[in-house]
Amino acid sequence: LTTEKGVDLLLEAFRCLDVPGKTLTLVGSDHGRLRDPTTPLQNVRWTGRLSSEALRDEYQRADVFVLPSRLDGFGMVVAEAMSTGTPVIVSSAVGAKDLVREGESGWVFESESVVSLKDSMESSYRHRDRLVGMGIRARETVVASYTWEAYRRRIGVFFADLLKSTPSSVTSAH
Image 1 (cartoon, rainbow, N blue to C red):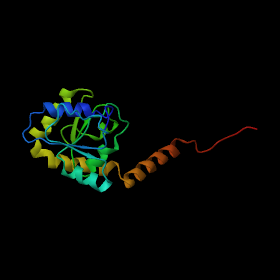
Image 2 (image 1 turned 90 degrees about the vertical axis):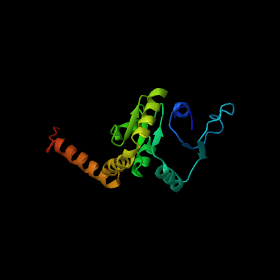
Image 3 (image 1 turned 60 degrees about the vertical axis):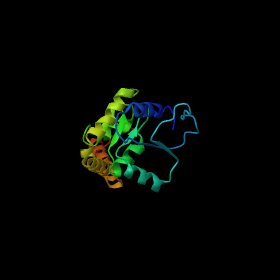
Image 4 (image 1 turned 180 degrees about the vertical axis):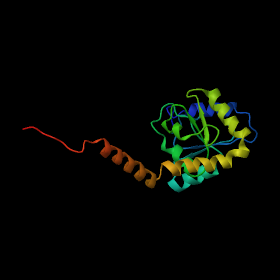
């Protein structure tokens, strides 16, 4: 857990979040860098690193998964969370934002904006009656596009298109 991953933004948005009974679970090592003993946060749990099974269980327990990264090429954790049926909140700087259908499988907030992140988190709370359906759509999105079968299909189409664009005969002069 680092500032590049936007954990400081998440902690600040959580601190400002006006939601009764809110809880935040942070997964990963922070090596003590992000914890401020002078201003402890209520209802924040740090798990440290988790096994794949334990991580899947955390995704499934969560109402939403949040990836507030300032810069992330894809953010495979977004697809992992969605594959378990968990709606997501991701920053606009995360490549996996393309997986998210706003308000249908999750939310995309403006990168670097604590207010935008807090607003997305509040929206997930206001629409918590829709989270199960959003989780189903999140899972469907990942299954449709990010399974080995879907990958093989895309590769097949790619090579078929490539062969169509290749000249059928090559002439050479010596």
